[in-house]
Length: 365
Ligand code: HEC
Ligand SMILES: [Cu+2]
Image 1 (cartoon, rainbow, N blue to C red):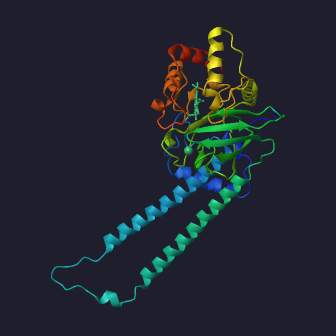
Image 2: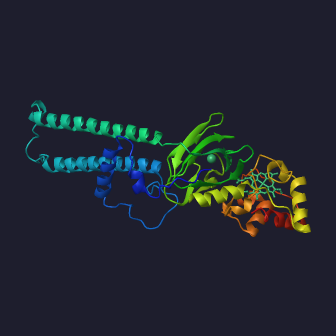
Image 3: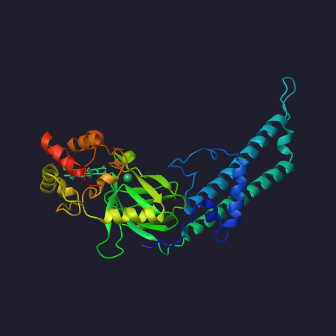
């Protein structure tokens, strides 16, 4: 883990070293933003799920392209409407008494012909311009320097996200669910996989979408340049709970990130009283352990999220509900009532056992 590097802290510094060819695109984007009169650009505070509020260099490239495209298309649309109004206003009016003048059908319309050819050529030129901007954006996106990147692996499941941080030293890797942490200013390379059906990784503040296809590995590279919490969402319909398949990316200062990593690496603490010990026993000898891993215990199931530090996550079940004791209890009793379709089964624990189980789970900070 290297932390010596000074983080890029805002988009100004991102813009400070544009990839070749992107300068013209940026200038056009700035002009476009000015022309579009602050449409949606001036909203206050930091919404966490917004492609128009880039928090990293990749999303900034995409935003520039979007702005250019919107501006060019709006100007063309306005030009077409003006031409149409003009034509309607100038069209000859029919008269009730005189028979229509059909002579114009025979006369060659040179002027109109020139206007149509000119407009066609202008359209082709503009479309080529947009194509060029598109290609330049694509190239800029693929040029993110990834030396010193944080590497992790993310797997889409129906309907939650599993993330594995690579081992810097053998045995130091760890898994989390539905919540990534990344250091500000350092690139992140994520290899994407899918376990069952196609899912799509999408954190609009940081980058565009990338499909997660079963049997095929792909990667996505981005860098968060502004600290914050950004929401990700599955962007490919993947079944019943597709809409409840979200996650968060917490971009934080390198020191905070390192502290988080160090915390996540530690195994679960030992139970400190009889109730917690009973809870752990219920978990490791019951069906929970068949699906969930808690490092430091014998539970090593892989069908559900790693729960070693489940209490460090503010939300549960892929951002479906807050991680409160009451919600945790309802979830363990009847997951299907909180997220219909989930593959986690309801449990038939007595009130006393459930109480012990929750007492222990709450130690998994
Ligand atoms: C058949 C496999 C299976 C069994 C058995 C199972 N779970 Fe789960 N569990 C899951 C899956 C899958 C999820 C993710 C659900 C989602 O987010 O859609 C989950 C989610 C959870 C979560 C929320 C984790 C998070 O970070 O969002 C908790 C807590 C949990 N299970 C506890 C338990 C306990 C306690 C038991 C035993 C009583 C248990 N589970 C039994 C599969 C299982
Ligand atoms: Cu999905």
